[in-house]
Length: 236
View (cartoon, rainbow, N blue to C red):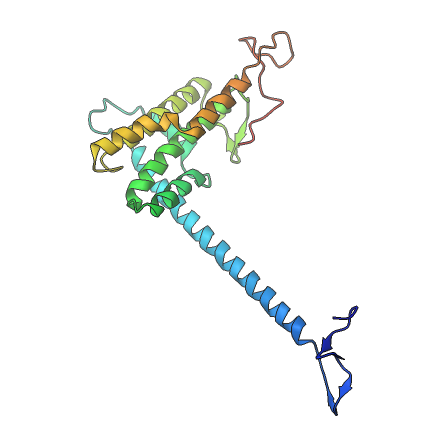
């Protein structure tokens, strides 16, 4: 290239050379072709990523729906209808399911059966959904909407929302302890032991602690005397 002009073997494109007129710029054509190939490759990768993410999301939805079925699991006393409805409202039909996706993809690197990884991912999603329900409570972020719908305490009531969070947290450990998660009881016990010690769980706890800043007397202080995060909403 010379300025904005293209040369072919040192001869400007379009100039007569040995009786033949050089047209176009092969180098530019090659670059354009390479760029088109890269864009095509990127589109392919994006499409594959979306397909894998959607598949995990669907599998997780099925796993969560089974965990939250109306019939009581073995050794359960009962499943209160209203509480179960609220738990399903909080966890089904929405969300990108990124956490289960990361679990499934990481497990695949180590040859873990997909069905086991999906159950572990569903357990992690239970904790995520529980944290959102409690985050939205008036004593926390005091949010009215979550994922385009009324938050659980708005759709039901505060007491139910608290129990929903408690139930989903408990259900996470229940899911990990089930044979469907892994046939080896020792592995299931290890999963249950490690779940609350994950770095993400530590970060979650620190995030909750940052909510409670003693600022009694300020306009955002709640009944406990701690600062609400209404003006500093959770960005997770």
